[in-house]
Length: 100
Image 1 (cartoon, rainbow, N blue to C red):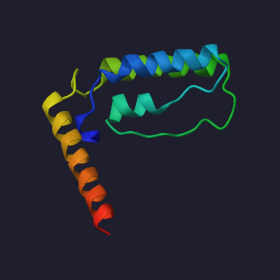
Image 2 (image 1 turned 135 degrees about the vertical axis):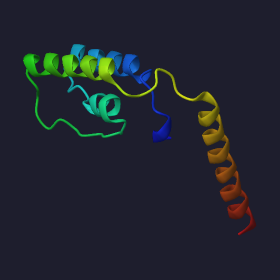
Image 3 (image 1 turned 90 degrees about the horizontal axis):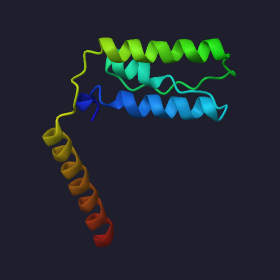
Image 4 (image 1 turned 120 degrees about the vertical axis):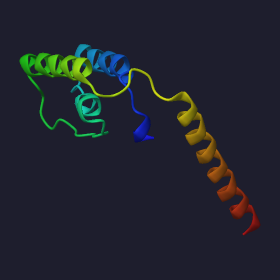
């Protein structure tokens, strides 16, 4: 699935970060890695960031989005194939569990 990442994720990541800022929670940093490097990285923030740090991360997120090498939209056909394969594997596991 990671091979089908796109810049389209920026908007939902930004909204999530903005909602976390409003609720005084720690904003996620994974969107910067996703957009700039095309990899998913969940690294929790282990301290309460200052307002300046949060604003800097938001700027980094926007910069990563603007410079992102990812395509603007995911490959919908590849995504559908991935979901079909995942569901078929799940059904095979369920059949095996019933037989055993």
